[in-house]
Length: 113
Length: 118
Image 1 (cartoon, each protein chain N blue to C red):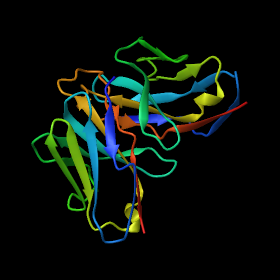
Image 2: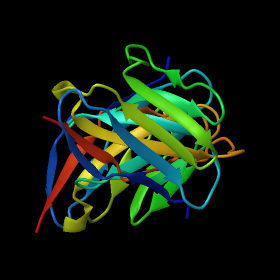
Image 3: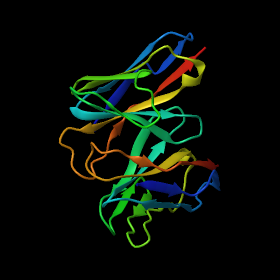
Image 4: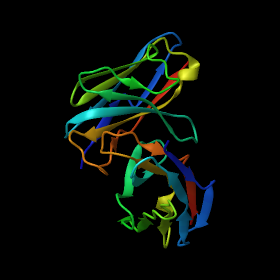
């Protein structure tokens, strides 16, 4: 089956610190990989995605590279801001937009001024 | 971009009543919609996959008679929580996939509906 494992949280950082959130996966088939962000009280927003090996997804200063050899999709940002405080979910799907998403447990990021 | 709305955003009801939650794709057609449930500080749990014009497919452990799903059109799916009890209190989120969406195409998520059963 498909599964996504995220590092344990929560994570608390000072503003302008470097961020890495680890994500590894197992999948039957060739997955597409996603990072979603959830702000308090809201639904999920797509942060970035990658659909094949060695692709790098990027958005709002966040980056993640699809590493097939290590089955990983770690999220990074060079300098976090207070406004980045949210819950981050790594996810995968095998197939198109009408295929199920498998989510990791999510990790809460808090950024201090 | 593609927008998905949910209504209501907040609902409080008495135990034993039924509650209907709507999920609409506002500017695109969605062949498939998904319903998730999220407990505080936890991940999303897929409840069911809703296909337009056919019966929903429920995940293992989800009571289909308790959580009625109807996908009557390409822009609307509804989730009805029947005879709600306090343990049904949760955050319900829907998502929609583009009709004809290709591999790697993301689903678009609604803002969620918070249900509190007293």
